[in-house]
Image (cartoon, rainbow, N blue to C red):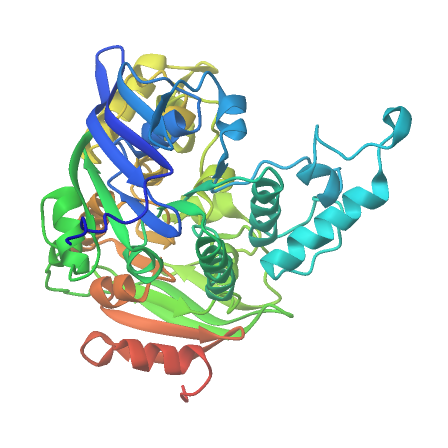
Length: 505
């Protein structure tokens, strides 16, 4: 007697031939996806590939124009996020949305808190349920602690606990590791594996390819709103996945170029800020890219902020093209030809309520103001020129910059500073949270700037990026520079040895 082949578990949630348009823009075209119980499934693609639209359809925010959403094999119509939650679908966003002044327990059970007789809230039961959820996740957080002040990692744990409290069977994790340290990512992955082993279906979205290969079993890749492939990750390489996402090889991420350093453009001597960094000295020459590496908390961002004048230093000197700067004076730094693209583009690099053109024009108001009024034509022309140079994808320059994808927002921040014609450009985590295609464009741009004689200081936690882009690598450990490594000798092992204090300067 023959038995039919084992087809494996049936999908908990699936999309079948789904299409979605917004006006003339086709966000999704005939896309199918299956999420299986006990499996972590990756969703890959560039910014603008349709990932966010797909997630919003699964979450009940959007309804497809055609095609079906299937729950346990049966077609369903999700009229809103409430329907998705009732169906056991939960979304863990990159930036958690908690009520900061409510306790963790109140956030988890908002609108669903256990009641005593006469409708009174059962506070002990709420706390006990929260403690049980946190224990299940392997996390120790006081249920009565206010959400305000929690790290992003702990906020995500609260969101996951909230999903478990609703008996969610499908977890959609949208860029959950973008703002986490290495140890926090490891803790999150431990929780994801626990959820997977208990039968949850997890859809995992990340621009970090190494994470996809570490935690996921299968991957669905989108390009320009269309399905490229849905397949197992076994046997695939990062280069294979990049080729599916952007149609080109991973090697193209780092453009080949010959560095021809000129005179010193930025000189930092014995810079010290008590308790933050000590005796930091280095130089950056025209036409070269210097990488600043180190573990999170080593003081890299703090040095950049001090050099630009955002934070005051206690001792030391900073010179741009021989011009000595005064601590705590960003305007003087800008006047000397220094530009800083900050790590947190949304909080520090953009005014999200303003338009694309206004954001690009903020650093050039002195040149576009006539008789106390902004010359809108000049501002728009300047913004259009830089948006074209950086290949920013937008609908209208007058639209709020918040409507752009993360990668295009990063390009707007770059455009804003490049419009000042800087002699020295400091870029802090220039490609964090953006897709591989946009990452390649940013790398190409930095290479072109160096070729044009700009001195570039690049801070990055992405070691392949540091090794692929930098002509020299400076490594920080606990507030000090512990090594300077030329490109020919820079390896991951050498950089990590210096970053952990195992190498002498």
